[in-house]
Length: 171
Image: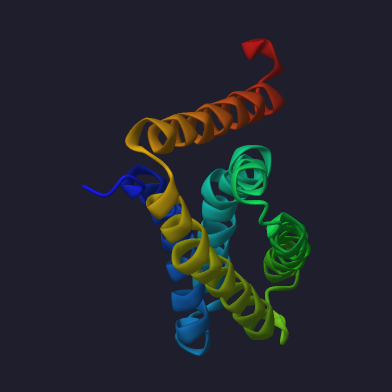
């Protein structure tokens, strides 16, 4: 087992969200309006529950650790990409509302999905081809596991905060 396997596994949910968005884009023309609404809702849910929290954890834990350890400041570029992802998600959410209200698939939906897929593929490529190999080569097992644990803690805290947002009585 590689030292960074736990960190790599955290990307599995990001890959799953990306695959959902890519599959919807590929199948968009063959789907009914109801099918688009349902599938797009699934993409938005996947991003909201898995991808966005992962991005927040990276910004809180991974990017500062990489910058501190290697003096490699990818974080400004990757954070910009996360803001772009947020903007694209807003557009997808608007398209989802429009499908529900208008009963039509917005013409720009395919382009929105394509932009999201391209952005996320590039983001994952940077992490998996630059950041994780650098961590693998330079961290010992304990350091790699501690980084993974801090990422998991950030993900847990994000999930807890979302639970409280949805259900204020959970405080």
